[in-house]
Amino acid sequence: MEIKAADVKTLREKTGAGMMECKKALMEAEGDFAAAEKILKEKGLAAVEKRADRDTSEGVVMIRCENGRVLMIELTCETDFVAKNADFLAVGTDILNTAFDQGCTEVTQELTDKMLDLATRVRENMGIGRFFAYTAQPDEYIAKYVHSDKKTGVVIVLKADKPEVFASSKEVQDFAYDCCLHVAAFTPLYVDRAAVEQKYIDEQTEIFTAQVAQLDKPDNVKAGIVQGKLKKHLSDICFLEQPFVKDDKVSVAKKMEEVGKAAGAKISLSKMVLFQLGGK
Image 1 (cartoon, rainbow, N blue to C red):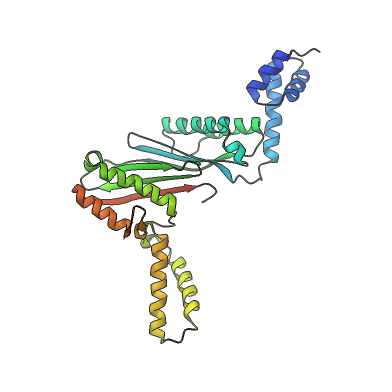
Image 2: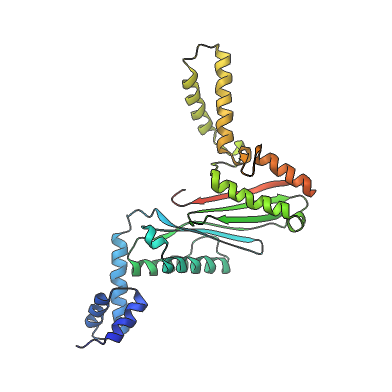
């Protein structure tokens, strides 16, 4: 049967499939547009299933923050080309806004289906990775940052004993944002020492002990060197103990204390959340 070029074009625009694929689907469906669309979708799903075990190390991180609520999501795909594609970004924005507007606290089937629909058209393995939703308490303030390449996103939540400073002090607001920049730049593994697992500390202690074992020094001196190395290492990986990105003469914790004191309030950290594409 004769297949009209206009129908092929319309089907292609709707499904994203190639011209020849659309023409073949219309011929197989004997001109039935809905049936042809279903055929293409089934083929797309089959292609996605074949790619399900392929690495999705590319993608984007997106954040929406309004009225004391924040949502950060990670969307993954196989190639950087697709990650930068307008359709991928548009679907990502739709997923972000749908989840935010519905108050989702986890990935739902509706959100998964939106991504799957694009995957069947693009025929590339993709999905929704990490998902962080949070509603601030009355004494909290949320700051966010997404790097220009969309591969790193940070959410910082501060708390104050006088929460009015979050509205009245630009210095406090700027500090919260600078904390986001700091986390994106230095990628701390932990908030502070208290958050570090004892197993990790024990492993590092063994490593440093082995490093100083051959030194010609008394055991108590060696033990002191090990503790010094451990202290330095923990300050490197713990957010509050790292030198502050905008003032490396003081730690993040010390800078927080200074900013709070200048604003007339005691400020503390409630949450630090970092999404780096491909991380955990």
